[in-house]
Amino acid sequence: MSKLRRQMRQLVDWRAAVWAGIISGAVFLIIAMALTAVYVGSPWVVTRLLASVLLGSGVLPPPATFTAVTFLVSLILNFLLSVAFACTIAFVLHRWGLVVGILGGALFGLGLYAINFYTLSYFFPWFFPLKSWIMVVAHVVFGALAGGTYEALEVETFVPEKES
Image 1: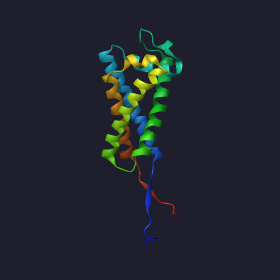
Image 2: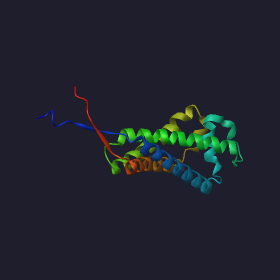
Image 3: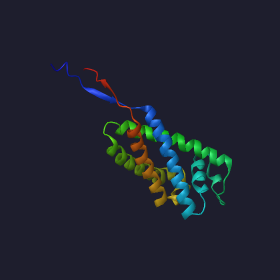
Image 4: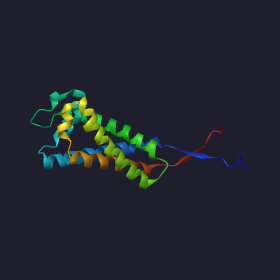
């Protein structure tokens, strides 16, 4: 009788994870740029900070104005990282539904903030002075939106577990 009742496992919907990364990455960038524009004076501080990971700290000195190269590099890096992080969130949280996706994603975003501004600042020391509530909010919203969007877009697929 137990052989008839097989255990099923849920597969990750990678297409939904990629879309969740794109959507939450766009919202992250919009929130970070908007809040930075209001409280710091220039939305381009965020794009320069992102671009500095690949281009170095030379792109950071004031004035923080628009430049096509830093903007393009920051967009590419932002969306690559957003998709990678959303895929990680999907892999970890895909079994538990919308509420856990949102809450777990928010915690994941908070963890990303801590890693970015307290650990990676060892390699990129110019990150540390930019730690702020603006970045906390942007990271938490990113994670919550990535987890929630993934769960909303996910097409659930189950496969039988392999027998031992």
